[in-house]
Amino acid sequence: MTDERVNLLGLTRPELEAWCVERGGKPFRARQLMHWMYKRGATQFDEMTDLAKAFRAQLASEAEIRLPEIVTRQDAADGTIKWELKADAGQAFEMVYIPEEDRGTLCISSQVGCALDCSFCSTAQQGFNRNLTTAEIVGQVWLANRELGWQVGDNRIITNIVFMGMGEPLANFRNVIPAIRIFLDDFGFDISRRRVTLSTSGLVPQIYKLAEEVNCALAVSLHAPNDALRSQLVPINRKHPIAELLEACWHYLDEQNGRSVTFEYVMLDGVNDQRAHAIELARLLHGKPAKLNLIPFNPFPGTHYRRSPQAVIDNFRDELMQKGLIATIRRTRGDDIDAACGQLAGQVTDRTTVRLGSKTFGLQVRV
Ligand code: SAH
Image 1 (tube, rainbow, N blue to C red):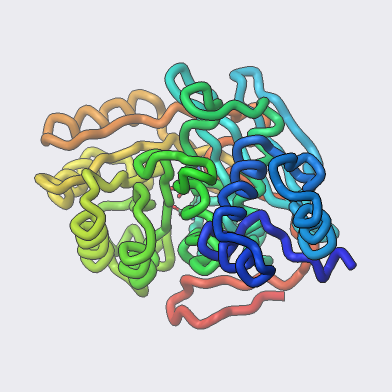
Image 2 (cartoon, rainbow, N blue to C red):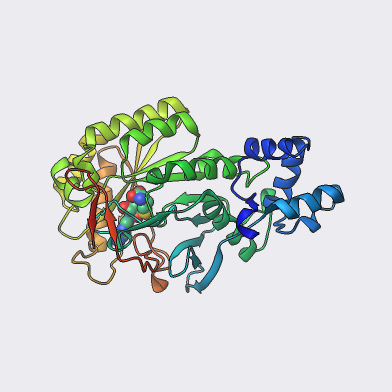
């Protein structure tokens, strides 16, 4: 029976309205349901006391509010929390809460594994397993709220959501877009559009599609100032080179009335962290609506990369700033529990790995 019931978590407001109308209800029932699910944290229809008893009974027989299961929780010394969530038997994905003085950021996953094969990322090493459903994406924010204590409005604990966990969100467009709609909806998590950030390795056609669909902040994993180097680090660059990617970014801002795109740049010792790279990067982005976010590399077992020394990272930032760019260094959080950028690697038992972003961009299956 469970399998036949509709999971209401993950339906956007129009979808939920249509669902209620199909069952003879008024569209405003959808808003009531969303209020209970996303503001009150309800999972049982019995709790929803302002709904008629008959409607509650109908809901209970046809629908459910189903969340992913938390497998483990780890608390880091700095207050960062990482949860491992169950996808299917033997498969897991992760989310991370990062408290700061003026905000609380939840870093969520969009896929189990990733097919993009960026050479410095531990998620890439496990290959791609599957897309998360909208309910599993929205369920992360729901569960983190429950774990941290439901608070709404000005007291909310999660103020920012970033798609910087496992997976390439634009490769799971179909499920990520409705999730973003629910994050932004007044009757959903009601987060402002500048506080929901989608980070992409650079799937250019999907950036154009995104511009038509939702309004949120965009971050792009650049990591190199030229195509030769970027193609080594981020293989999707062979298909969509930097010039094309930047074009898509500026288009996105135009369409969305956005202020700037954040470019992420992982600092790899001796690879992309030299003064010449900073100069080239400054030339590339000078005068553009761009912010640079330098991420000290986070090592993981089996990697041959090393983190750039702090002095090198500081000099790199100073060089960019002198050339008129806005550049910040991302503070590494939760590294004692492997919760830092690029360290998320849920367990995948499926032995077939699929990788995108190869030279041909054909699907390569490695067994
Ligand atoms: N697929 C999305 C989200 C990935 S994670 C994307 O590529 O943007 C968010 C950021 O962490 C990306 O910029 C990613 O390149 C970076 N990252 C990946 N591995 C890392 C590592 N080992 N150390 C530091 N940053 C890393």
